[in-house]
Figure 1 (cartoon, rainbow, N blue to C red):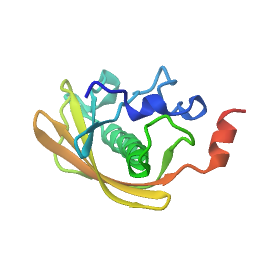
Figure 2 (cartoon, rainbow, N blue to C red):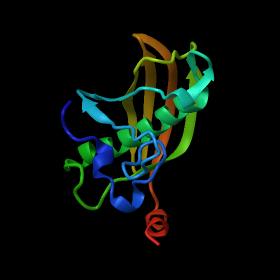
Figure 3 (tube, rainbow, N blue to C red):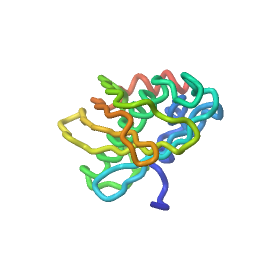
Figure 4 (spheres, rainbow, N blue to C red):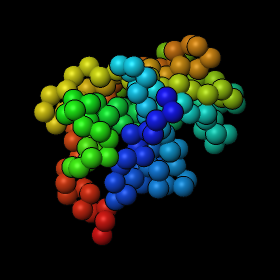
Length: 159
């Protein structure tokens, strides 16, 4: 898994997301890569992500599932089209729907692994399911319905 992450191929004008934007120096800069037929990201929570001492707040978990899901959607679109990431036109996805199920408290101080599976690709829509694991225990699951980003969103980002 030494290859570049899908987020490394996002065009500059749409690379500012707090969760996964490589051009946001204050953000999480989540990186999504293929691992066989699944995608994987790893993120170690910061002290600022505390809900209760020793545990991660749920908003971070939702953010990780969200950004991993849209990253997985972009990676899947390139794969489905038989194209290499970074080729034009770029695939960039945004969230149409996000659902998260919290299964157990997520501990601080350990890397979180986010794994995504593509459930459906249909036109401009990709459905991704995800799990968040800490120390080998699944802490949360989720589903992202991602849609290809409308062109006008990129145009606003470059003005």
